[in-house]
Length: 127
Image 1 (cartoon, rainbow, N blue to C red):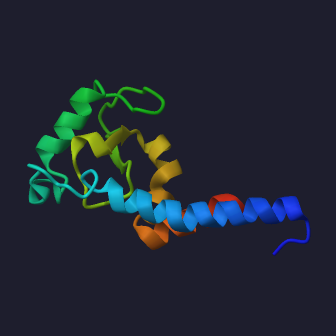
Image 2: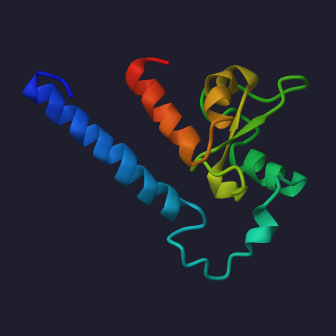
């Protein structure tokens, strides 16, 4: 660990948050708190045209980050908010333009438990 006691304390808290908080967040994030209720998980396994249309209508056919209107080749890309690429519920998707999606593209390809830990470590060390 670090010789500075304050930094040592901060590092320990961050590690605990990453290891324990991340596991809890990821466990509870896919379709709620584990109690799936009446949600048909198979319905949201793939990103269908109707799901895309629902997300686009909700965002008024605009990027949800910079508000640019989608036109022609400036088609929408979709980010999975909770990190699960299998969770294609409209409430978990965010429509982004190509420029805004460039910022999340690397993160989007690193979803899942190990990918999330790599993202957290990358943010901490500037990757």
